[in-house]
Image 1: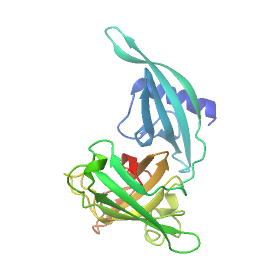
Image 2 (image 1 turned 30 degrees about the horizontal axis):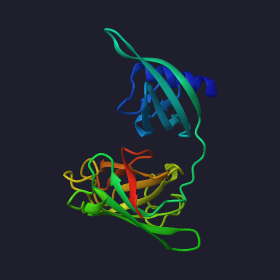
Image 3 (image 1 turned 135 degrees about the vertical axis):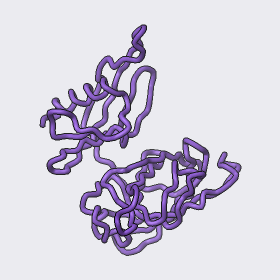
Length: 240
């Protein structure tokens, strides 16, 4: 399928629903569009989406797109999609430059500290990620007990997750790890993120995007993993 056709489909999908809550296979095509996994920023009457995953359901190949959608307000109809003002294949991003520091969740002000790196070998480094309290940085007055270990490099050959069946299907836009101590639903990560679930992180300027790649358990009681995040949390760096 050509890029021009995909751009047209992005526009049609946006006109049908501004932000779908889950992935959708577009009728008459072999692609699914995952708006729920994109980074979304509003500006005036434009909705800008960065790194929209578009997946070929036959091959599993993923292409990322950046797009801007323009809306208008029509009396008696409400907010209506007007046009797609730009669309392009996303530029490759480097996940090697993960920036340690204290990050604050944009949704509930819980804070987390990304610590490291510590060298594992010549190709990989390990980071720890845990809940912290720091009133001076505007953090909540209680710490999420959440802790995780992240290892740099590609998913294949990852020392902590290489035995998981999903590894060959994980994209290169995140660095991955596992949750050591889960986050109860009353804390910062949207719901109860459980121990041993798969997570990934990536840097976007001063923001850290944390994705949960597991949801539910299989017949053996082990986490069920997915190739794309089931939930994401965006955090802003507030201190070194």
